[in-house]
Length: 104
Image (cartoon, rainbow, N blue to C red):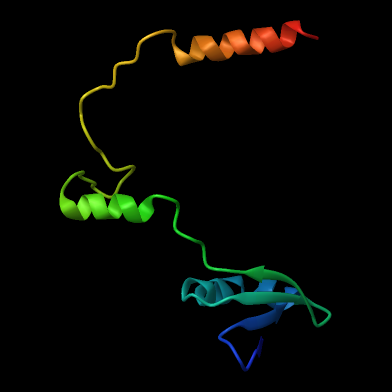
């Protein structure tokens, strides 16, 4: 593995990456970027995953006690069911599919 002196990024050949994937994923988990090289030229970059949109907002709501989460699935909010009026979504989708098929 070659390190780039100016940053905390690592460059690794494809064969080395395949042989020691867990080690390089560990570097990525630590927040570092890993550049994948082929014949000395960078062809890909492995970066740490970004948090899903809304994750921070959800965690903030849990901290404030507005919602409760046991860590095993999506956070639970209000227990009251949401009532909707009109057609069922599934019926609307089926109608739209039938309409699009009838055009051809």
